[in-house]
Length: 157
Image (cartoon, rainbow, N blue to C red; front, top):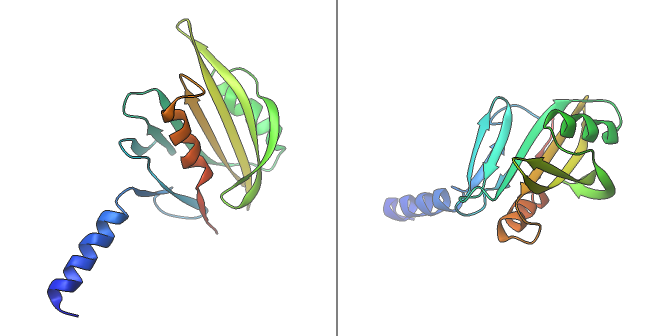
């Protein structure tokens, strides 16, 4: 293969993975995922924050120290974020691990937004949490946020 072909391959591979992100950027456990087209994603104060271009949906992820019940983690996390208590617990697979999904709402400034909370124990006393907040449960931005959470890949310890 010529040098030019190698450079082209490297450029194409770099472009293909430009929307892939790892959280946290270093260390383990961690998750990798595809950032939805047009969304912004960055680590802020130890959490991953991703947002739709129009702000109609956000996803916040954190890896936190936790050894208790996942229902308690959901309740404490949502309360700290000033959201309604979780309800509608459903078993789900998150990053290939057995976890849970809960539904809630956030009411602020006269506006109510749909909240989906998920958590999963990662072992070694840590858990992954994810909060999807969207203006509308049927919006395309909410569906992109769901896809982000549904396609997490675990980078183990």
